[in-house]
Image 1 (spheres, rainbow, N blue to C red):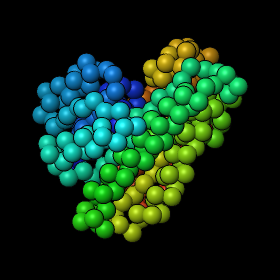
Image 2: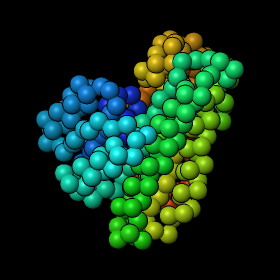
Image 3: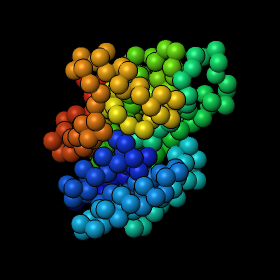
Image 4: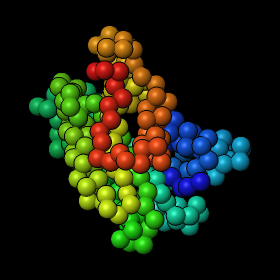
Length: 247
């Protein structure tokens, strides 16, 4: 058994990933930004069946929060060997010509800078260069990185495109140090993120544009994430795995 950290793990894809990792015997830490009740309930659910879990509030865009989060994992769960950079935000739908710099900066701060900071801390712990024994990182990107999300949220799409580049570059940087780095790019997945962008029914509206003719479920993305973290994916690094129903 190992120790995994899932950022943004209190709901949606993150929560599905936490549950699957715990079911497979991993000790799991999760971060959340606002929904303490959901995070605490998930931890209680895991502990009720004998698992090890903890939750901590952290804004991944704030270095102090990231350092505190990783420090708590070190102290309470032990050496980290898996990181899922899942924390992410999307702003209300709109065109670029209506976006202000504060919105753009916040989207990139969470989705891109936050992933950099968490990956940095994971490498400092996992890398054989730093005395670690290796591990795996999975970045949760988005099909938006290649589709662009015109008229909706191109800032979000661009932030995920940067995450793809981080994945490819970091994978090569630490491949010889025992760390694999991959990304999943979910497509139209039925989570709360669509409501936060202003259209709770977005999955239903766009489902017929997906070759499979439906939106995906968080569990379907979690399965891909957990596979990439596992020994079964031992020769896979620098991969961008689309989980998007063919879209």
